[in-house]
Length: 103
Image (cartoon, rainbow, N blue to C red):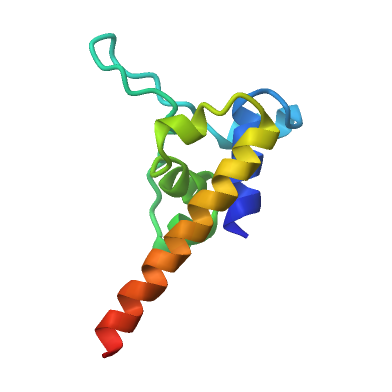
Protein backbone atom coordinates (compact mmCIF):
# COMPACT_ATOMS: atom_id res chain seq x y z
CA UNK A 1 0.00 0.00 0.00
CA UNK A 2 1.02 3.61 -0.45
CA UNK A 3 1.02 4.08 3.33
CA UNK A 4 3.60 1.32 3.81
CA UNK A 5 5.80 2.58 0.96
CA UNK A 6 5.87 6.13 2.33
CA UNK A 7 6.45 4.91 5.89
CA UNK A 8 9.39 2.81 4.72
CA UNK A 9 10.74 5.82 2.82
CA UNK A 10 10.59 7.93 5.96
CA UNK A 11 12.44 5.25 7.89
CA UNK A 12 15.11 5.01 5.18
CA UNK A 13 15.67 8.78 5.18
CA UNK A 14 15.91 8.88 8.98
CA UNK A 15 18.31 5.93 9.20
CA UNK A 16 15.76 3.57 10.80
CA UNK A 17 15.62 1.02 7.96
CA UNK A 18 18.18 -1.65 6.96
CA UNK A 19 21.25 -0.29 5.16
CA UNK A 20 20.62 -2.15 1.91
CA UNK A 21 17.39 -0.20 1.39
CA UNK A 22 19.25 3.13 1.36
CA UNK A 23 20.58 2.27 -2.11
CA UNK A 24 17.06 2.63 -3.52
CA UNK A 25 16.56 6.24 -2.37
CA UNK A 26 18.71 9.25 -3.27
CA UNK A 27 17.93 12.44 -1.36
CA UNK A 28 17.89 15.57 -3.52
CA UNK A 29 20.45 18.16 -2.44
CA UNK A 30 19.23 21.59 -3.64
CA UNK A 31 21.55 24.43 -4.59
CA UNK A 32 22.35 26.77 -1.70
CA UNK A 33 19.90 29.48 -2.78
CA UNK A 34 16.95 27.08 -2.76
CA UNK A 35 15.49 26.14 0.60
CA UNK A 36 13.22 23.29 -0.48
CA UNK A 37 14.54 20.12 1.13
CA UNK A 38 13.20 16.68 1.82
CA UNK A 39 12.85 15.76 -1.83
CA UNK A 40 14.04 12.53 -3.43
CA UNK A 41 15.69 12.25 -6.83
CA UNK A 42 13.46 10.61 -9.43
CA UNK A 43 15.73 8.34 -11.48
CA UNK A 44 15.29 8.25 -15.23
CA UNK A 45 14.08 4.99 -16.73
CA UNK A 46 13.89 3.59 -20.22
CA UNK A 47 10.50 1.96 -19.82
CA UNK A 48 7.12 2.96 -18.45
CA UNK A 49 6.90 -0.42 -16.70
CA UNK A 50 9.80 0.37 -14.38
CA UNK A 51 8.61 3.91 -13.82
CA UNK A 52 5.27 2.67 -12.52
CA UNK A 53 6.43 -0.32 -10.48
CA UNK A 54 10.03 -0.07 -9.28
CA UNK A 55 10.37 1.13 -5.69
CA UNK A 56 13.18 3.53 -6.56
CA UNK A 57 11.08 5.15 -9.32
CA UNK A 58 7.57 4.94 -7.86
CA UNK A 59 8.38 6.17 -4.35
CA UNK A 60 9.88 9.60 -5.20
CA UNK A 61 6.79 10.52 -7.21
CA UNK A 62 4.60 10.16 -4.13
CA UNK A 63 7.14 11.33 -1.53
CA UNK A 64 7.85 14.59 -3.34
CA UNK A 65 4.12 15.43 -3.32
CA UNK A 66 3.95 15.36 0.50
CA UNK A 67 4.06 18.63 2.39
CA UNK A 68 7.31 19.67 4.07
CA UNK A 69 5.55 19.62 7.45
CA UNK A 70 4.58 15.98 6.97
CA UNK A 71 8.06 14.95 5.82
CA UNK A 72 9.63 16.71 8.81
CA UNK A 73 7.47 15.04 11.48
CA UNK A 74 9.15 14.82 14.89
CA UNK A 75 8.84 11.04 15.19
CA UNK A 76 7.79 7.98 13.22
CA UNK A 77 4.58 7.78 15.26
CA UNK A 78 3.73 11.40 14.40
CA UNK A 79 4.60 10.74 10.74
CA UNK A 80 2.24 7.71 10.71
CA UNK A 81 -0.58 9.74 12.22
CA UNK A 82 -0.14 12.67 9.84
CA UNK A 83 0.28 10.39 6.82
CA UNK A 84 -2.92 8.48 7.60
CA UNK A 85 -4.79 11.78 7.89
CA UNK A 86 -3.28 13.06 4.64
CA UNK A 87 -4.15 9.88 2.71
CA UNK A 88 -7.66 9.76 4.17
CA UNK A 89 -8.39 13.37 3.25
CA UNK A 90 -6.89 12.84 -0.22
CA UNK A 91 -9.18 9.88 -0.81
CA UNK A 92 -12.24 11.88 0.27
CA UNK A 93 -11.36 14.75 -2.07
CA UNK A 94 -10.80 12.28 -4.91
CA UNK A 95 -14.09 10.47 -4.31
CA UNK A 96 -16.01 13.80 -4.19
CA UNK A 97 -14.30 14.83 -7.43
CA UNK A 98 -15.32 11.56 -9.10
CA UNK A 99 -18.90 11.81 -7.89
CA UNK A 100 -19.14 15.33 -9.35
CA UNK A 101 -17.89 14.05 -12.69
CA UNK A 102 -20.43 11.22 -12.75
CA UNK A 103 -23.42 13.49 -12.04
